Image 1 (cartoon, rainbow, N blue to C red):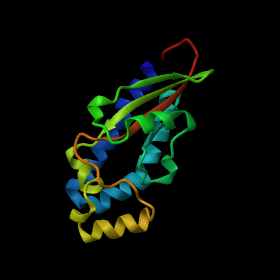
Image 2 (image 1 turned 180 degrees about the vertical axis):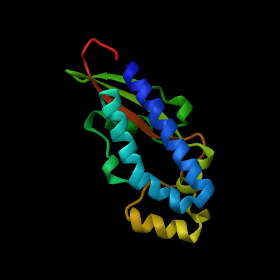
Image 3 (image 1 turned 135 degrees about the vertical axis):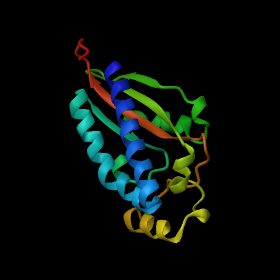
Length: 160
């Protein structure tokens, strides 16, 4: 649990930092590319550092590579459409591993790329169509449940 929580915090901080810097310097269309290219590598690096498996998923995916693991699906279904503040973290016994979920809230800056697509700039719409032709991750409102950070941690009895 502790490893998962530390990994979630590190992933959230790294993604927010990188996305906010890109949004400020280059705008939402460039930030979409950060999620496509850099976010998976950040998660991979942190997973290795924290000795676990790590990712993000949602009930409304943008990137099909973030499809939920089977054990996550029922929790996504229960949380969909709710306020993130109503969704609790989850710990699941997976046999030789522990699955951990932390809800992701849709923050104000998230709405630039995940809010109402009618308000998106033309270059953002073009970039989303290029990178994610089957995008379902729009139409969120601030504070709404966006998805989960997930981790799978081997049961080892030790905490590094």
